[in-house]
Image (cartoon, rainbow, N blue to C red):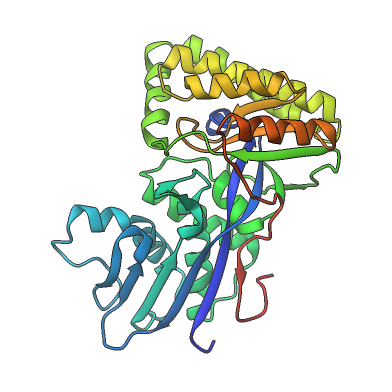
Amino acid sequence: MPFPIHVSAPGKLFLIGEYAVLDGAPALLTAVDRRVQVTITRSPDERWHMSAVNLGLVDIALERDGALPAGTDAATATGLKVFDAVRQTLAAQFETPLPALSITIDSSDFARDGYKLGLGSSAAVAAALTQALAVAADLALSRAHTAALAISAHRRAQDGAGSGGDVAAAVYGGVIGYTRDQAPVPLTWPDSLAGMAVVTGTGASTSDMVARVNAYRERDPNGHAADIARLAWLADTAQHALTRTGRFLQLAKEYFEALIALDHHAHAGIVGPRHQILHALAARHNAVFKTSGAGGGDVGLAFARRGADEQTLRSALENAGAHVLPLTFGAPGVRIENALPVR
């Protein structure tokens, strides 16, 4: 493969199934048209170099095999955690070590006003880096193999946490039904249903909220199991009701209410006053607002029937100061921009 290598991968939105997916329930996700860009060139010297300007990383010199140098400060090590996990995961696949490389990662599409939007930037980075390093090694990967390696690397970077759904959406693209450690099911977004991504705050820590939900599991296993079972049933039902707009809207409403119950019991910070206000506003326009992904300050979702309901909801949200992101659902998955697409 001639250099430079340029690979991109999309962000994602959890539509239904967040939190329950961590316990093996199905989730409904879509890839969106915000993309991470990864560019690889040969290194000008014998060391690897890494840049991710939007993360404050500019031409970081690494070791000859791409490892982080001893004594790397904590902030830099955190910024390079996904890269290092992908590098280590892919190294086991190579017959011969890669030459020294210069890598640039651009995930600026995933932030607004300096804050992360919760569109799965780290998952998209894992997908794009996995594909880009495979190309650099002349290693042909199927989508399934790419997903398996990227999910493994992303979990390593997250200390074993994560369902893998965000990475699967980044690799496969489109709209998918996903159950942990299973191949995703491709779905079609219905023409009758509008989905909007709504900025609800200034970003949130997924790991903190998941940790609080896990703490709830420890102190009240029966209560946690009941909350998750309710979410799991709603997620599974919603996935099969996607083409029935009225039924899907009702299930999305019930899922948000079930998340409120989980949040109340776990004290996790998933649902805040702003979410409650937007949910009530959407209900007045025959629509549904819910959190997406971890919740907290990340982007939320609004669903409405196409046509008049969609237009009145969009106007109402904007009038309430809620910015609707210009996103398209069902975006293509990871792709090599300067060569043939992955199989």
